[in-house]
Length: 275
Ligand code: HPA
Image (cartoon, rainbow, N blue to C red):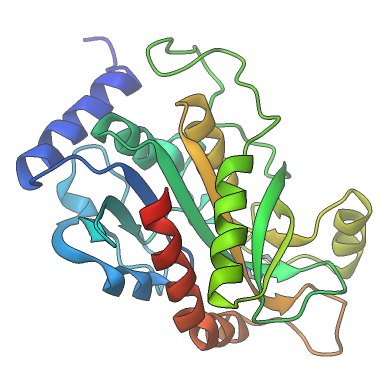
C-alpha cells in the first residue's frame, strides 16, 4: 500500500477530534515552556490527550503536558496545544508541524505562538515580553521539503510577512491598553538542546537577531504554507550566553517564565478575542 499523504493523515486526526468537540475553533494557540497556565483562561474546555489522536506525536519534555484543548477564550473558539514538540526531542520537522496542519483543517485562521527565548538585544531584560516581528531559520530544517501537496499550500510560500502586520498591530494596541510593556524583535530559531556559545550569540546579534530559542520556526513555516495568519510572542527568560556573568540553566528559564506568566496570560487572553 502506498504511504498515506499528509493530507490523509491530517484528515484522520481531524475526524477523530471533531467527534469530541462541539464546534470548530477559529484561533490556534501554541504555548511554550512553563506557559501552559494560559490554558486556565479557557472556558468550556474539551481535553484530548495527544496520544489518543491518530498520527499525533507525543510530548516528552518536562513542563509540557501533551494535551489538545478546545474551548473559548473571551468567547473566541480556540484550540490550544498544551505542550509542543521540539526538534531537540528527536522529532522530525514534519511531526513538529503536523498539529498546525490539523488546526488548519479544523478551521483555524489565526495562530498565536508563544515561546521562551534568550535575550540577545542588550536593551532587553529577563521577564520582558517580545512581539516577534520576523524570524531567522537557523535550524536548517524546513517542514516543506519533499513533494508539495498542492491541497495544503503552494510550492514556494512567501515569507515576507511571516508574522502578520495586522495581528502585530492588535498585539501592540492591546499591550498599550493593559499598560504592559511589549518589546519587539527578530527571533532566531536554533535546534538546541545545548544553549548557544557566546560566539554563536555574537554571530546571531550580527545577523540581526534580538532573541534566540529552540521552537516556533517549523510551526510558523507550516502555518504560512497553510495560509494561517501568525502572531508570535516570546518571553525573554534570560539574557543569552556570554551577556551576563552567570551561566544559563533551564531552572532560570522556568523561574522567569513562572514569574511573568500572569502578565503573559493577561496579554494573551486580551488578544485572543480580537484575532
Ligand atoms: N537559548 C535558546 N533557547 C532558549 C534560551 C536561550 O538562551 N532561553 C530560553 N530558551
